[in-house]
Image (cartoon, rainbow over all chains, first blue to last red; front, side, top):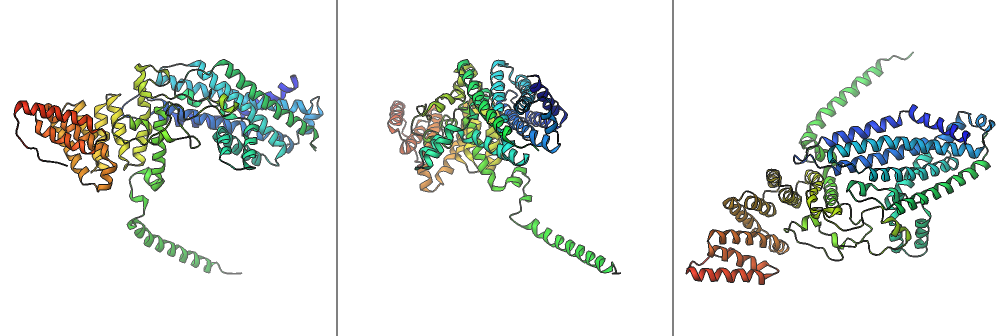
Length: 258
Length: 302
């Protein structure tokens, strides 16, 4: 475990040394503050449009951080020729992958704390409501979802030749799942065989990341998601993340690193 | 060694050519009808006519907010959302909706669908009825649709319905009569012959300012514009005519001008989908007229 967390701590340090997070956070804050100054029929209590813009920017920023940070981990070690010395130490390949995974995932979590903190402050200052449990649920499910994304991108970094191709393909896949993942079964119903079976298979095989998107519930002040459902969603995501990590570890063990 | 002189001459010639072309094309471009730079509106310059598409999107977005996020996507059955409910609830729009209002989602198709319904709004509510909390004291939350409506009017100033819907909710729920009037005035500047906007403006004068004479003038102007429509368009827009004429009839009845009131109610009855209701009012007015022995024969307006 010590080896895993040693690798993870290096990844976390990398996040706060790089400028990505600061740029995205300042950009999000600036856009939201500018939007907050818009006068809409002299009514200062209108807030939901601002919550929507802020949450959208948070989602985009978190995906950018998660995918771009994860995609460069293994290729960077290889390019800098630090991969072999790392593995020469008492560090197994599985520990390296797990260290990279936890590092990226925890780094995303730290970034989310800042983003949701800003969101809560912005929302509370206008709405004078503090549904902290709702925000906690949304942020936690968001972070759990990013775990699946990080595991997927880590696998992609072993499959694809360059970090750029891995990042692009990961963005397309994640955006595709978030936008149409929920509707694939409806699309399949309108198709003929064998397309129908193929689309249905994709529908059941993909990790449904859209389940973890509570933005509409937060924006429109809906009640909490039942805790039992919340726990099941976490289990669902952890199962996918574990499966992807196992695949990554198996592939990395068989891969030549020199 | 080759002299650099031909290169300098060529460079000078090219610069002169560029300057001449720029001077010629610049004047032509300024006079060109298709130039977007003639517009002072940034959105128009950036988006051109495609801004109407975005305007429709934001108008629908406002209706999605009216439902607190419970709204069909392009993959769902939209039969009951053809006419936005926020517009339908103003009472001045012909509804094209049919079908199940409460459950466009239908029964869950599979376990993923059933499970996913816990993570997005899955219940039909309206903001003016309290939204998800169903607490009527929060019905002013309908204000949340206004940013999208405002953006929609800026992107498509020719869409009359956006102005009337915005003004209605500003006036009815937010009690912002001045802002509602400003919206309608802006709508009239962009659509000077809109009977829909004039009808809403008349309601504002009548119901909010209690200025019946201005309301009457505005509504009568709305009727004149409606009567100038081609017959086909009149057939498609009978609801607003019925509303205008009924409102004027009511004003005249209240003012004691029973003959005029009778005239307006009869005009409304000709286009009404529920003529029986209006017949009752007509009979009541006739009874009053008989009591007062009024013998004035009204001049038909329709």
